[in-house]
Length: 215
Image 1 (cartoon, rainbow, N blue to C red):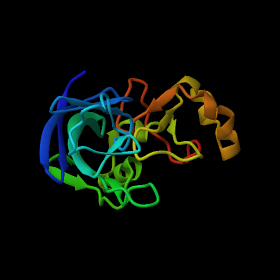
Image 2 (cartoon, one colour):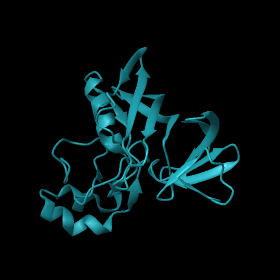
Image 3 (cartoon, rainbow, N blue to C red):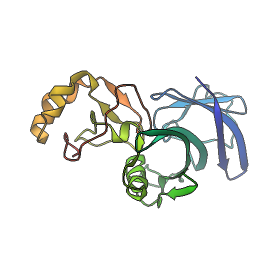
């Protein structure tokens, strides 16, 4: 798996580290300190003992910092596949009295055919930020990734800000028969795996509006 640049910024400055992302697990290295997680808001230190004070840990995970990095994605431009980098900014706020943090969310952008498309950063989670960009793309152009796959969905119980898509490529016909939440619960626990919105496998098919639970 390829290492990519990962910028971590907190109250004391910026560390330029590395990220390894296999579509499910995320591993970050910052000045030799490793953090692992699945959703960017759950990055836990592999070795908590001796962790420098600059790293703020709340409920075992990094907070009070910003991340800047890229994720490679494919843009399908009328059946021509173009590899682009999705620029990602992720902000994690400070802990507050209720045990949560005061802010959290993504802002993303991509460039295609010399045009830049940016999300507002107001939605917070990767799903809605990606859909904002998708709406800006020209007719016949789409991000070829799990977010737009025919066989992906989210749980009615809710999901995190990133990496919680349910893949049903193992139950394609059963999934395509889903017309309601009740139907969805019949296959809900039989997903193939959880995947990131930006991931892509060789069984991708473009989503048809109205499919599955999420429509």
